Image (cartoon, rainbow, N blue to C red; front, side, top):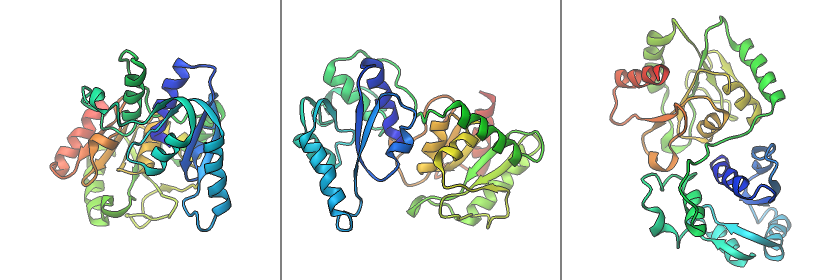
Length: 292
């Protein structure tokens, strides 16, 4: 959902009076687009249709019976997205496949957040412009509350470096890797920064909860804290994208997934290829992030 926010901002720019419905699996749509004035409604497709068949049927009924001015399939590899684009009523439909040849001119067209934007541009012959960043759009109240929590996590007035040690499948780094990384990070930056851990909803820590940490199930609360941090470092994950959308400089750790598809972008954000960098080289890249 966070990777869809750049496209929603593009549509907001071109059609300021339009309302945008978002058709997606999962329950986070309303949370992500809470502060987007152009957000219309969410059409949630159950991840487990056998257990929620009525809800599943209701979502597809809404797609088939509604009439839209424009439909954009943000992921051409999604079967449900492609089917929904075919079935929904609209004069203008961007499938994301017919536009592929035209958008390969962009070196970063494979990025999941940028691909649908380029497809949209290509369909309507829109001149190239800077793509919007991932953006959660925290309210002033959320930012102020986040700042209070952020300060409560500080043992001194040093800025915080936030680590996220969890991920799924092969993207995860084990405790040995993280302890080696933390030792180097602490030796290099502890004089100027404090280091804490942001825990996942599973409450799993590769430091065995020995590092000062923060835990919450509220993604907007987490983002509000990260918004005030000096740096976020974590494996390719939803939390990494949440950090980017909060506005904190983010370094994503990549070893199996494709950086060209998921890399953090905008501002000082970037990725670290942990397959071809030593720990010292990683520290040098972090140093460079702070100095730029």
